[in-house]
Amino acid sequence: MPKGKKPSLQDVLDEVRASQEQIRGHGVILEEMRSQNRATIEAVEAIRVTVDQRIDRFESATQDRFTVLEAAVRQNSTDIRQNSADIRQNTTDIRQNTADIRRNSDDIRQNTADIRQNSEDIRGLSARVEALGSLDRRVSALEQRASREG
Image (cartoon, rainbow, N blue to C red; front, side, top):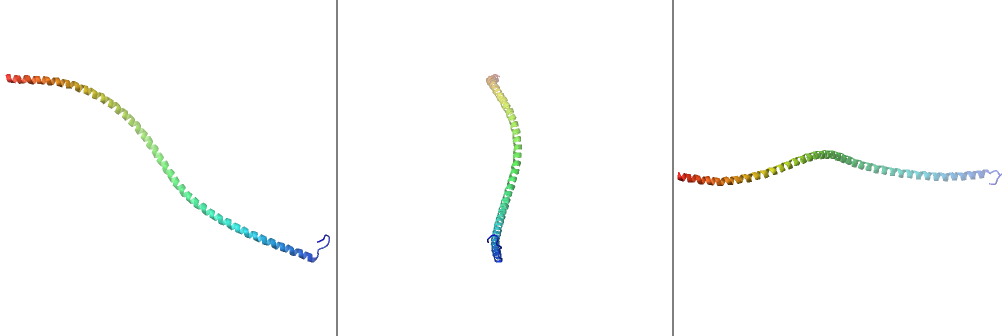
């Protein structure tokens, strides 16, 4: 429309009709965008539900594992404390056994010395017994002679 000239009623009506068509076109586009947004929201919601379910399953499985692990750790801690007590007792017993072994070794050395002394004493006594044996034979011979003469 040229400048300075007043638009006719027909021109105004044509412009309004064009604007209405344009508004209707925008309305269709807006409705299409709303539809796509609803579809996107539904898809996101479906994914959220799926992810929530997966997280819940994972959490449940993980909690069960943690429960088992916690029980194992508690039992291991109890076993370690018992083992530590047993080790302390074994250390005490080993020290006592070491002292006993030393005493036994001293006793064995003393017994060995006593056995040597007893062996020497036995050899000495054996020599005396042998000497008494020949003396006994001589006394027997004398007694036999005396009984024949008598």
